[in-house]
Length: 304
Length: 254
Image (cartoon, rainbow over all chains, first blue to last red; front, side):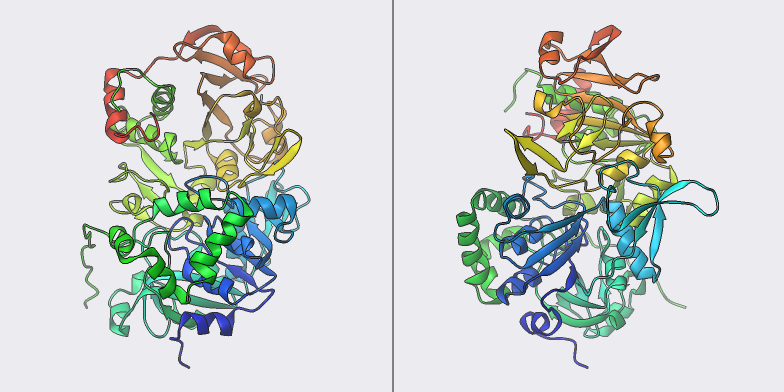
């Protein structure tokens, strides 16, 4: 089956109302903003978002009314701190009430890892004694059957779909990623299916030239969309640097609900796909975000 | 921006750097702790290794100023780029000597809250734990850096996001935490240690120009003071040069 398709088609086919979606699994980099914006344009509702942190992608989806629940360790704007849509939703139910399942980075990572490994839970020593674990549906204090120690059991969390942005992948969805990985690999393995966006769609031979760098195997992937700058304003190592100013501007503009709605109209709802979003940014700004000094890795020899 | 006056943040960074011993494995945070790590590596701890929760392990400061740990200059030239579970497994395994933390609230026993605040009776939702609860639970010791003001220093945190000594010494063992706890709290006014008997924060030094009255007024409980209360040593010439090298525009320490 043909996996390569336009991002709009991939979202339309594979993202449904009410789904549990893992995104922003790389933490501050490779956040699939282009895919998130397409979800907003297509008006998905009642989504459950999963991620350790999401920088401002979760805030945008929440402000756009797409989300009923967040399962995360941190929701905010890494540069500026507070994410205003998240606050408005939790504190005032605007634009709609938002449930939050709080985690630490390790507990959400282990919840997803348990699903990736096909087990109902994993034990951990973190977060014991904190208010995070109090009355938590997925975190439970248990006694170790071997040592008798008190441990935290972290229940499995299986996303319906994981959306990743990768540096490059082939038409089958075999993806090369590099840089920090966060929980991207576990999230890909845990989910029912994976939607990939990438900076470059490459020949199969490029992927098989360096199999250690293939971190998501194509048999997990349903759809692949080539979307350069698909992580903007977050960075993708070797392709796009972080647009720090964008986060600061977003922080200022979205302080009030009306400001966010104007931002949303200008950057997402009023743009046709990611290409439209990028033309709003402008070529000058994009050029400033492209890496200036290449730093290629030494080649490795797989010969025999 | 060059001024000869030493800022309180420069005092904090120098104090943070001195918490890192040579050869230690450090769970590094952003901003001031990141600078402290760079300073320690450059001066007295050339063999310290830094772990970042997004999966980065590096032994040198990032090649250019960064806002987040995922910024490209923090990846380029790293020792290793891996997963969150990988680096946090080192933490859970007990291999991390010191972890740095911040917080919206810190209390008498070094517990941190980054989840819920309150302003004039209204609850305010903060971003949450991130990796802080894990670092606080699992590092061999932690160092907390925080701006010192009364609303951030309640006697008891409203919400316990990241564990210090809970309700006192012995609490960590009771709840099942196998090691660790805060070693130092470095604020914009002074440096605290912890009483080995009670687990309570004890003021060890005041930064240059800060009075005890001023610090008491900004703290929500009767502060215990060490019998040999000192002045926090300001950054040495060497430390100051290094701070200005790593933060040339005073973005974090100005």
